[in-house]
Length: 319
Image 1 (spheres, rainbow, N blue to C red):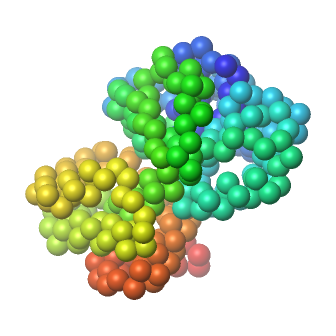
Image 2 (image 1 turned 120 degrees about the horizontal axis):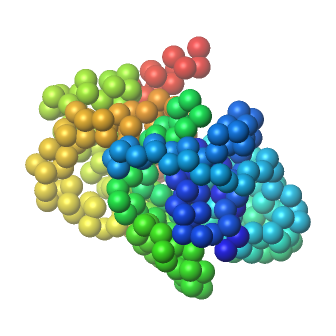
């Protein structure tokens, strides 16, 4: 199938590699320095856990034109950048399906904007790749399991898209999970990852500094529980529901998992590096979480205390 990956960061690069590997005709949309890197060096990925490096020639373009045609377009960008690409997506009249991949706290707004402005009425879906890493000197350092998760769904519980998604991912290593309402999934994901981001900023993006900080690790766990309580109070569903139950019923295991993650390169590549390079996205998500807390009128002392470290980090970046 003919696929466009709109965005050439860590997630987009790995998705392009995996989809090309199984025979799809894949094109990456990139700009500036990243465009030149892909044209000159190809798609270079260091698969960190697998201890191998792959180099692939790949089609690269700088823009999506109104008459460009792809079977599916995956928009894999930080949420703070998505709004800027919506005009190009709405102007396109040939692409039947767009999948927004990332921490989309504004999924409903994105879907409604495209419905209002697009004349071709494309199918709009939302997804999330469970992959971490960073870009470094023309290559991507990718942290992923042998079978990384890909969560996908729409906002209304429809499943008419499943056949085409299954065709695309059938031979890949991705484990595909379908969700009835991706807005619930995204909000759940945000309340789980933000306490980890706060720990990263507490340690100045060096998670090893807090791996022995029992108080901080426990505060992060309590902050996750507070975030889940906020979502439930506002009428959202925890998705997956088992994630909240695990944290509450297996606190000791959760604590040890955080401790090991912070002490190893996984914490650096999966959390610290992303928070360091994606601080604007984390600041955006923090503000979204704060709005939910205000609406819920619940007390969240652990979130309130931990997010001070993000605020200090962002203030330094903005000066």
